[in-house]
Structures are given as structure tokens and as C-alpha cells.
Image (tube, rainbow, N blue to C red; front, side, top):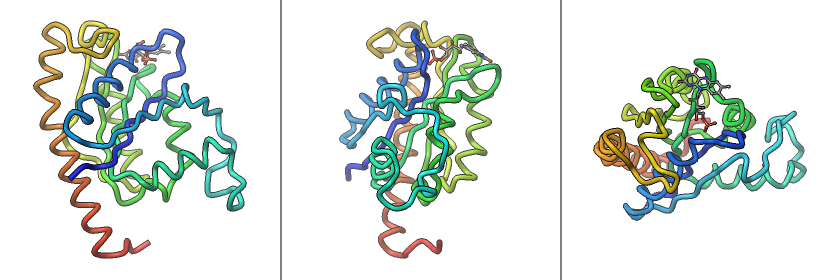
Length: 196
Ligand SMILES: Cc1cc2nc3c(=O)[nH]c(=O)nc-3n(C[C@H](O)[C@H](O)[C@H](O)COP(=O)(O)O)c2cc1C
């Protein structure tokens, strides 16, 4: 059964590279029959938030935030495309993620990291694992790691070279893992109302 999945990416840099990985994942999940939407914080024009979504009186959140809240609530699962800045997370994606909370609950999250180097952003991926768990998502154990990103995916998001081959080999298990948990969580939510 098709799952509704959001792929979230939050670099605001002019010459950003992670969009290649985000596009690759969107295309790969769509090819499996899922309904996939890319949430690109820069393209949506999300500002630095000064209040959580739930802190606004009902109906008074900024339109972009209201729209995003509905998309998050309606999704069966999430893929976080995470780059690494100075061994840490990217502020744009953290800003997007932090200002919602209950909207994320009771769904799986997958982490796909990348960087300019061979470590593929794994230090940021490790930081995201705890953050996403804290925010009520079940973080799946399969990950994708692309690095060096420039030698793994071309501008259109197509795999290149040995890095691209290894990414393409890892993708099916990553997608299967996410689909299994998305299905499990959706079935359980339908069967039993979440406890909080
Ligand atoms: C401010 C900054 C800090 C960075 N820190 C790291 C780092 O700690 N580790 C790493 O592997 N790459 C680091 N890089 C290189 C990034 O992996 C590379 O620029 C990547 O393309 C960033 O993602 P983006 O292009 O989607 O913004 C850094 C890049 C920037 C701009």
C-alpha cells in the first residue's frame, strides 16, 4: 500500500549540495509507489521561527507553518536529509523540526546523511537520532550515508561512480525498513488511539 512520506531538507546555502540527495530519495520512493513530497525549507521560505506552532492561537500561525503542520500530521513517515556543519546539525532543518512537536508523534523517521567528505555527515546523523526520538518519532535503524556528496550524485540526483553504486545498493533496504514501520504505525494508529 502506498505511504504518504515527507522528505525534509533544510540547507539555505546558495551552492547547496544536499538537494541532490533529497531529490534522489524523492525519486526512489516515488518509483516504489509512495506519495512523496519534498519539504525544502529554503524553497518554502521558512523564516527563523520565534514561536512553536502549538503556541499560536488556533488559526493564527503563519500560513507556511499551518500548511506544514497539516502535511506533517497527514504523513505516514519522514526522511530527514541531514548535512553536517562543524560536526553538528544544520540550523535550517533544526529550526523547521523544533517548532513542531505533537505533529511528529507516532510515526517513523529515517535519516539520510551526507557531507563533502568521506564521513558522509555521520556525526550530524548521530545527533539527529536522539533529537528525532525525543520528538516522538521511531527512528529506523537503516540509514543512508552519501559522501563525498559531489562524487556520489550528479546535479540531477543520479548516482555516479563507486559512491553512487554503494548508495543505490543501500537504498532498497532503507526504503523497505521505512515502509515497514510506516505501515506498522499506520495500522496501530487505526487500531488503537495513541495514549497521548
Ligand atoms: C558551515 C559549514 C560547516 C561544515 N562543517 C562540516 C563538518 O563538520 N563535516 C563535514 O564533513 N563537512 C562539513 N562541511 C562541508 C559540508 O559537508 C558540505 O559543504 C555540504 O555540501 C553542506 O551541505 P549543503 O551543501 O546541503 O548546505 C561544512 C560546510 C559548511 C558550509
